[in-house]
Length: 185
Image (cartoon, rainbow, N blue to C red; front, side, top):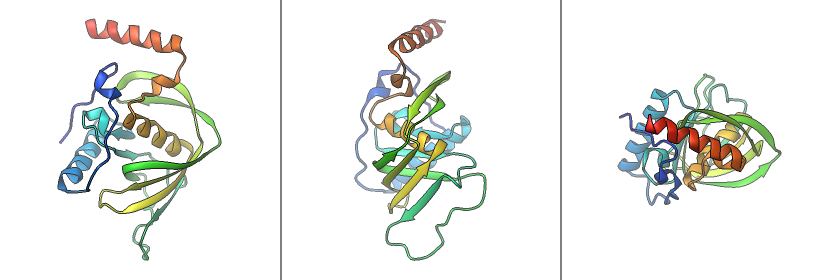
């Protein structure tokens, strides 16, 4: 099901997400709906906060990112979880925790909750994150480049932070004024 996305400056986007207690059918349905919503909006990432579900759940699919990550599943001995050699690389992060960052790089970012606005943001170029996947399995992911940026962007949402919060106060003020004018019509 395609879900409505909250738009800036909606105060619900500032809500800190709660940890998921168990990866049950409710969470699996949420993940499925989040993927469907993200794809319908031509996004590459979506946090549950953006659809007014304040749980630590993020989905993403960064095209052509197969060379930008190494995925290690805990307690798995087989090779069935190797990355497919295709354009799409859907990833789900439940209760994610960044355990390491390195390097810095500026990327132009956009956001499904801030439609039509893009700005350059500096973030770590390489990160390591631990999380559960949609089957409830713990994994560690080492990511770089755009995928690392996307992960940091989406994980910010779980803390009630938007990419515009990384901009200067002047840019934030201008965006807020522009958004309020657009809402008034």
